Image 1 (cartoon, rainbow, N blue to C red):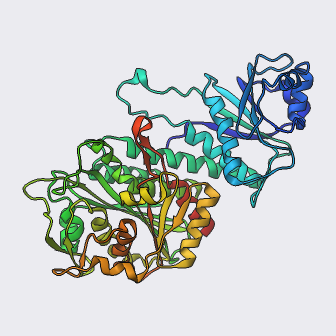
Image 2 (image 1 turned 135 degrees about the horizontal axis):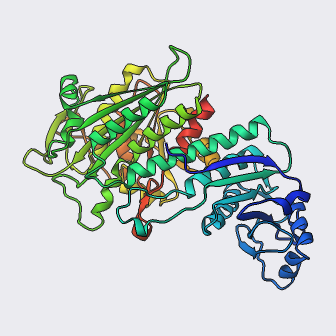
Length: 501
């Protein structure tokens, strides 16, 4: 994982504000015109500039609103940004608090500042403390300063000049404060690593590439080891369902296994399984041509689990974690799987493939059977699985389905805490009948509730352990002019595992 920023945390007394030597200084400004101690100090040393601007209504201080003072007198900083933080006694939701921190970071990134300082706002957050603020701020600083370094036309690449960020708080930083800073930055870097994987074109980011990059990660981290299975090994094991997806491609399908040993020897691992379809044409059930280029993002589930296990290794989290990536390229061709074909899974169940574009569940089925050998404590699979999930939840929220209430609730809570949210959908037995087949044990599509029946399909292979499924079709990347991978759900997965530790 690339380190893009140096972030430090230090104590700052209001009387020292004028001495802060930085290109850009960011403070919070209350909306009830009661100046907090830092804004009051700035107002004092700058000859009452804040009050004057407020009286003329030139400074808005609603939550997340941004105002600035260029070269204010009495301050070493060339530029000061004032970010609205709500009324003095307000108790804010995590979502509103995050929007404040995001505005603080974005105000800096919109400049050419090489160094910047943020005074952590003194705000009250429902259910969270200062450490949550510190973790979120360091995460956002790293995450929002992402650039796609592999862009071919370097002249057009978004340039982020910020190299150093100092976070100021009103008391001497505790070990918990410093730990929160470190965790937030590591998760931010992990999210950026997932973005790099997702943004690469399909002719570079192939199943083999995922394997070589995973091996490189294992060389970097002491407690991480990697194994990559090719088609011959998977054929020998009986993973015909996974292999059927890559039949039409010249790219070899791979199963990537990363094991992080941070816990005690013999402790059951938490297992993450990622869908790694490095390009999805739909196969014989060919997708429409419009926006098909975005199907390079169909491996974002794989990107997230590879990145999350590196976050665990970076932070030396005392937990055993296994990440498994089921990877193939789904192409049409003379050897491609056809609608109506029947394949046998590693579990022994047979699948009638009615639609070759419902391929993610096929690679996951064999991977979810393979991971039983690890005797997992929990299993969470991550996949850009269904367009139906976008219809149900849009692009803000991932779909969550599970065979275990505790596991589902732990992921839900981690999503709230990390602000990488997921919402639970049912996988009741009434939906299972939609997958009935006249010619095999199970069909790979069925029914109108596409997100739910896809999870029902996966549930047929997960009866021996606690399992949850995250459908990130709407959250792992964005389309249109802002096209790119989002790095989600690395924050959710990382928070979930940190909480487990």
